[in-house]
Structures are given as C-alpha cells and as structure tokens.
Amino acid sequence: MCPANGTGRPGAERRPPGATAAVGLGWRTLPAGMHDLLSSLLGVPAVILLAAGLGIVVVTLVSRLRAQPGKRPIRWAHLVFGVGLTGAGTLLLQLDVALIGVR
Image 1: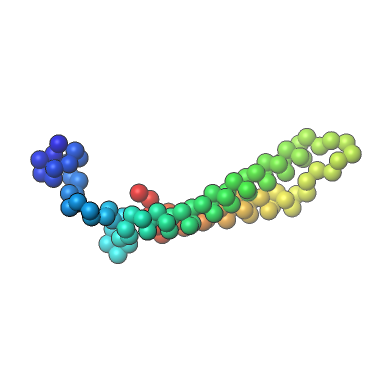
Image 2 (image 1 turned 120 degrees about the vertical axis):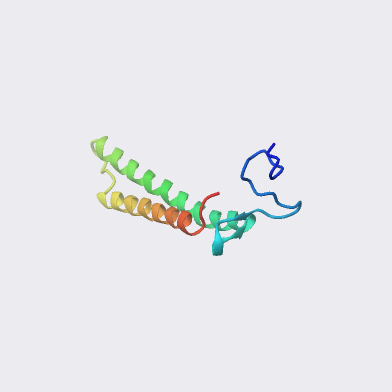
C-alpha cells in the first residue's frame, strides 16, 4: 500500500468513489465506456477483414498447390482480393489504435 495515494501502486492517481476512469491525454480524454464502444466499432470490422483476407489468401494458395486433375483451381484474382482485404483490415486496425488508443 502506497501511503501517498492510498493505492497499491506508487504513482497511481486516487479518484473519489463513483468517478469514471478517463482514457487518453489532454484533448483526447474519453470516458472508459465511450473508449470501449468506439474501439469496438473500429476493431471488430478490422479483425473480420483481416481474418477473411488471410483465409482467402490461404485457400487460394492451397488450391493452387494441391491442384486436382479435372478441377480448376481458384483464380489468381482471388489472391489479389484476399491481399486487399488483409490490407484494409490492417489499415483499419492502425486507425483504431492511432485515433482511439489502447488501454
């Protein structure tokens, strides 16, 4: 217990009971609930795009490597589409971290 602020962590701020935690510094201070909501509105679609893009890339490459006679493999255009989805997900995730930040 740190005697200066009454918490278990030296240097931690002591808030009165019922006060909400603020996230960020200066002009980017958001209540914790708003931070979580905004982060999820950007983060969830970003992860979906990343997963879909990586899945399409892997399926395209596997279908090309394990080609079966009589079956046409997935076109190379699907590989480009998967890389595009992965790139979009990565950019959206970076936007989320840059604008909203992490806790």
